[in-house]
Image 1 (cartoon, rainbow, N blue to C red):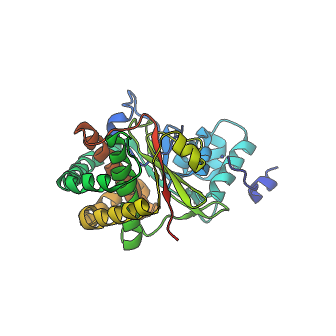
Image 2 (cartoon, one colour):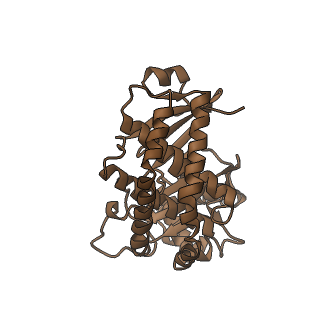
Image 3 (spheres, rainbow, N blue to C red):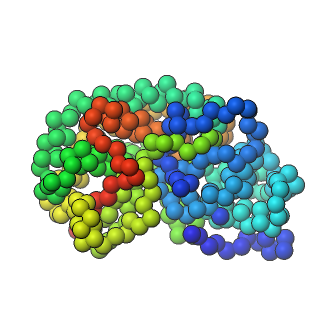
Length: 341
């Protein structure tokens, strides 16, 4: 959990969500009554996964404050209209500012430093998300022989359930591996996440009105010696920085140099040759969709693309699972990749 310095405003006066790679509309609650404009019923998500952001946005006060700033409230109005200690609220505000989740020139003109999507807004995106996911599943299905051939070429994972390896390769290797590299190299859709906090860690972030989706996809990673350990699935691993021998002992694949190089080449080529050209062709339409959001006044296009792409990934995975091509983990699958020199 994070510990941040107290802002000067505090001196004078006296921070599983789970992070989820996007909104899955069918998994969101259908409220019986219309919510007020300012409330705390939002789910925080980020990519890459941020422990700091997730910890901070577990606070209902933090989520409510961001919703208030989205509505143009000043700090004074937040303090006067919100129950609780003024000192506690100012501490939350200081944490949000330190994590670059609140921005603005003064206490009277603060805005969220992330994308904020209302439930009614999210519902309007569902046809587009479903159509893009169907196209992704179609493209992947057309190249499935190449995917199977790649799995057959790997030395690691022998004896493992094939559908698990396919999940690791397609989801962890391509959809939130090679595709993210393609985005960052291309620079026209997601040029790179904003820096957050004192450590300068970069991640895209969003708040989605509603409750926790059931089929979000999360990838975590940690460097362990000459390896990178990955966790990919619907749950957050408490410990990703696991010893490599312990990973082998639990039956998870460890991809050594030759396998790792095959993995990198496959993920990159598959993403850049097949999936990325389609998604980039959608840039103009995505710009239009971004412009329909209230939060487009302050949230960058790249932040919207990150959230929207995660939604496409979730729905694509759901389709591939339903088709029997891959199997979804109950929580997550772990694997390790030998890093290049």
